[in-house]
Image 1 (cartoon, one colour):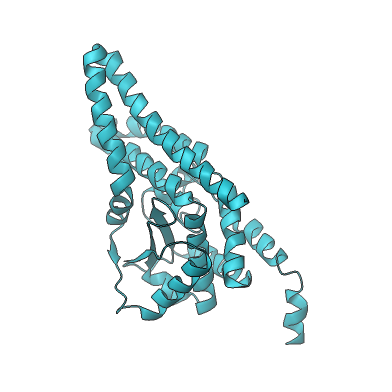
Image 2: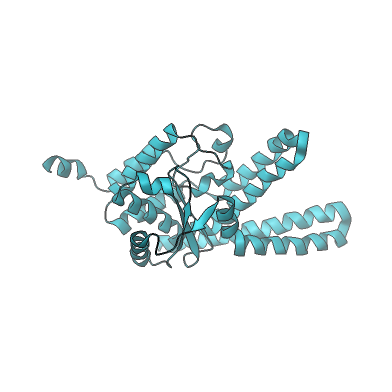
Length: 280
């Protein structure tokens, strides 16, 4: 029941975001040129909203340089994902690969039946099978809760606002100073850190143990401290943890609870793990 309410809330947020986006464009057109221009902006807004809904995941994946991963390239990975998707009662996602060494993964999509997971080559190389399974389960949980339904459009709109500042020439810094807080406000208003804790809890259920994901979070945090990550800060909500380190601009978009808190919660789901470890 809680999962269903979580999903419904996220779908309503997505509708509110796209509806608000169209309304903002109509208001801008009306202010500039009255009813006639407002009507034009209404049509344009509907087209943009439809593009965000239907093609938003592809746009984000393309902007990150992701390439679709075929079953022949990674049969074991697809087998793991299919099993987790079946247990989590979601559709089988498309898998994409990010061709770089920074360990990270993300999920984008329109819902539990239509979504994709992108995995970096660095993540596959760095993590153990149990850790990778925990991360995949976490991303599948975001689809089950329909987090992807709101994460994808929110991040895409924030990306466009950040990129809009780059056309300003010598005014770029001024535009970034104005638009970055607006983009961050959209993200912070719609994406709660609690969604990450809920995804962690469901990942524990899917894997039958919280420790694979807990170990993976520690490993990812250590990698973030050692390897500088360069990407648009607006993409921060998509990743399993915040990969940007102490970057000030990225901190505006941070929607993740501290890794230490998440690991403590996960370990607490299996309070007897220390005793079993000593016995082994």
